[in-house]
Length: 133
Image 1 (cartoon, rainbow, N blue to C red):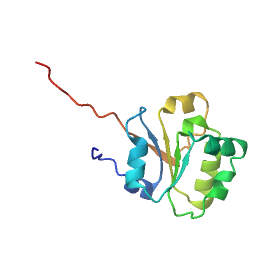
Image 2: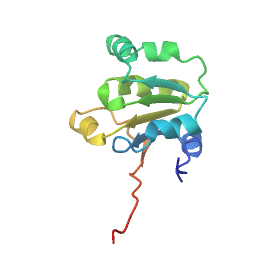
Image 3: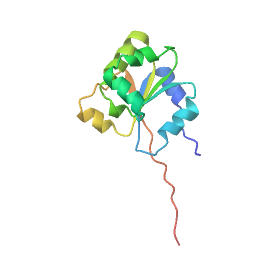
């Protein structure tokens, strides 16, 4: 395991965030380490995805504590959910961490990128340089 400089708790104390990075860079692992008490909606789980795609308002119903950080993992799978996130940021002051492998899919799909309500952070790949002799 490697230490990362990115401090998710400090980021979320200020504002909601998108956290993008290539697959297998450790986004989910970082969330588990740094935000163990957050409520996580993993859109790779079929049950979670299907519930929210049918009724995005179930997001609000599933949040018990407005002061708890809410993580939506793989947000690019359900861009329409960003309208509900936008509403909850405005109406209830909920802080979200929205993760995904690419902002490109969201941008090209015309998704609500929460103009000014969420900042962007990137988790880059860690490279190990080796010399071969």
